[in-house]
Amino acid sequence: MDSRPPGRLIRMVEELGLAIFRLKYMVVLAVFASLFVALMLFLFGFYELFVFMKELMGGDPKKVQLVALRIAEIFLFGMAMLIFALGSYSLFINRL
Image (tube, one colour):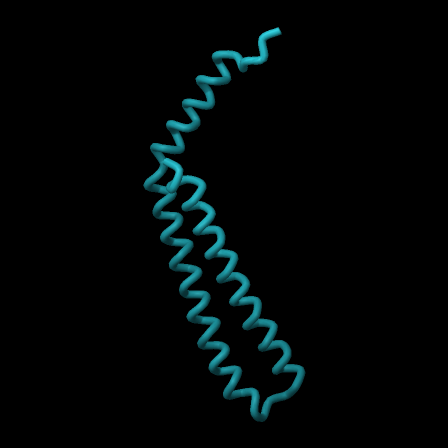
């Protein structure tokens, strides 16, 4: 029994690879946009952290907890965008 994939499947995979290669520059744009968003989220997180430190001295404990959770959420979104950008780069651009 022949275990090789049929010729049609091989052609489809080759065409898919060629299509991804043609879209390489669009993926580069998406990677740079994701890196920019990650940088902006980190900068916004540091700004919020600075404001939080000033507010920490005489704030309501419940409000302080909510602001701390919000800051952690901003940094987590920034890390997610950074991981997405680096993963997209390594998957689509680095290998081509």
